[in-house]
Length: 216
Length: 291
Image (tube, rainbow over all chains, first blue to last red; front, side, top):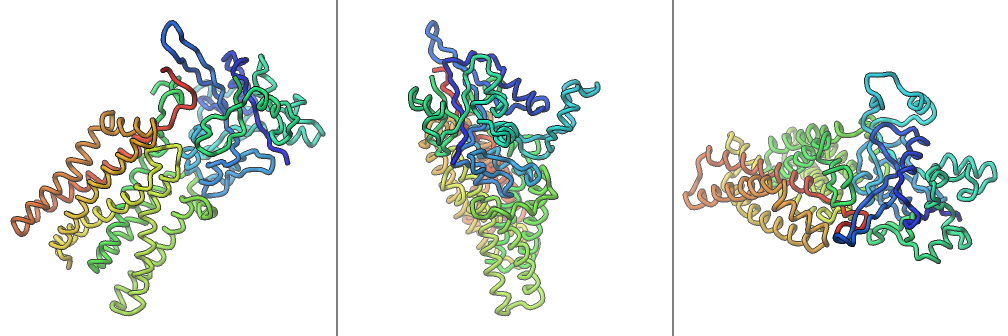
């Protein structure tokens, strides 16, 4: 059984925000909405200060609390481990937004928000409304670029190996800090990275078993 | 908070208290008042109280929740996951209460004193009990917010709901309905003490859930929401009504004006308590922060 997951190498990440921009472009996200974000913090005291950049996204948790709390069955966990959201079933109660300990869900409030208010829509916005229509009044989140994964598998490609079948944030990371693959395959690149470099999850104490690991 | 501090510092929940989230706050207050009033009305056998509470639960609680939904016309879908979702269970309890409550009201009006009236009183009473207590479970299920992740919350909301119900039934009694005012006052006195105790224990417990829980409590007692806690909850919601209640105990019977004043202050307390609990809910930072 496949279980898609991601490994993010914090040593490689340079905090360039290209994952955020790529994701926005890939899913035609409206202004102010991000499915992956970069959190930057500092630890220590001057002169020993460390700057840390943590890219965060939906963790596609194995024990996803958002799946459990969703009253309408809009949020489900697929057999391949992806936590999926059906906009046609979402009632917009935002219980999942509240319940996610990683705060990786966004309520899509205003469908009329434009990048350049008062002017005409940009080409990206026009194409986005046709190709990737988001439904205002529902919750949205990162889907690990499931369209690319599903289409890639249909074509016989391997997600995480072939670019065409791999999430956009992984393929467009200029320093190759992100890796994607099958967590259940002990020989996959990400399983090896987790084993060899002691991969860790964010807040494992919540018991959600995230599918996104970090290495540093 | 600054946008660059989002989930880097302690981050407050906003969806259920800011912008349209205000509707959730109003719905939760209506839930307490409506549900508590129904339970108290059953005890005092006040048909007017039962009818009012039934209306409050449907129109205010149900209405505010309905208005809050991003896709309100899909509301029926909320009944589809009772196995795991407390919100789904709450929707089912609410629907059952509306149905059984209507039947019970019809029996109480046209066929009072019958076995069927009693049976439906028990069923509707049980349903409204579940409706009131469910709000606490919806919130305490969320382990990402330590302030809410407490077993005390359902109990606190139930106790507050019954206290609010007593306040409203007192008003109904003062308006001429057949309600034992002395008994309602005695109940209020007891519940005011119980509530003060429960709130203290609840906050005390939240401190020991970890750094985020402690931070939430500090935010509550010293932060931006502190004036609402101290003035709204403690002074208006507990001290003033308790003072009036105790004075009436020694005087014999307090004037109607004084009792109405106590009721108004108690209502301010009910609104303030839910507001502070919703507003002070914090998430833990996702990454190591400045030491």
